Length: 423
Image (cartoon, rainbow, N blue to C red; front, side, top):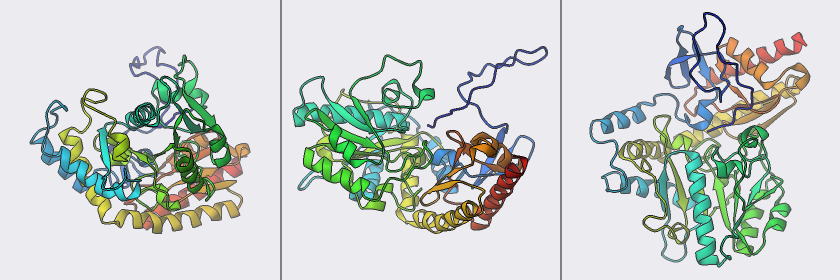
């Protein structure tokens, strides 16, 4: 899920207008999508748009990827839900294949141990699961006194929308009006490893961070940040949890963003792209001695690990096992960032950040807001989304073609030129 920082429109109550029965917790761009394929969508009027948002990375493989549609369609003809009260024939194969893909990228649980996974649905559920597991591990294994477990988190974070998760957000749109909040979190500046170390004490069970902060505008930390976090967590007996829900599964040119710094977290949360844009699928993958604190009845989900989710998840893993999509993100990402850097050089943007097919770009506030730029792109047949102020995110599907990416960059240059001229 992703934050929406704009004020929602008023309800349609004018004479002759149909009542609006949809709650106004989003402020979408004025386009109504009817169909999608690959990196393109078509609205109800038949106009096509290049999708440079990809569902905040939920559509890493584009709209209606044939392998994912085939897997879902085949499974719809078999069984869609059993609940975890019973086993089904895809649950263990999905757990095996996912841990084979992600297991080498996370810490093991000691000699002879193999990674484990917990299947859930949404990214927020995966984060909630990681928080619960870290606390339970802290009490049962580390010996933290009851009720005192603490977790260190970063300013500018976005991990979801549940009450517990917004308790450690510093985004007023996500947080205001939802107190009282869940205690047990220590907020420190993102990218400052010393601040993380200083916040750890004998009650600390985990450090929970996004490898790259997506909602904040694709903020990439210093190169020594994650290696230092790994060392500090090892020295202090604290779990390192990487929230890879937006950054993972190919987006950065690697299977996990943590690979960019050769760091293996203890637990990793996955979501969004794991469901291939078909159904919500999420998971926590990591050390068996940590996830092993869960016992029957202590945590669960009616839909987590359902047959339809596992069918799609298996197809997603198969797409990632070849490395093709990671390579595309690396190669096209290099091209994308070169095109964006030229916009900075020409004075059309004030800043660009990111890696792979993921970028945060900053517009001079004097020339408009991020919303203004997204509306200008919409008029040119390109979909993107603002985040905060005059910053927008670009996250093209990993299946995007280079000519289409160039088309999007040409539209971006034209939109920025117009905004500069209008001011």
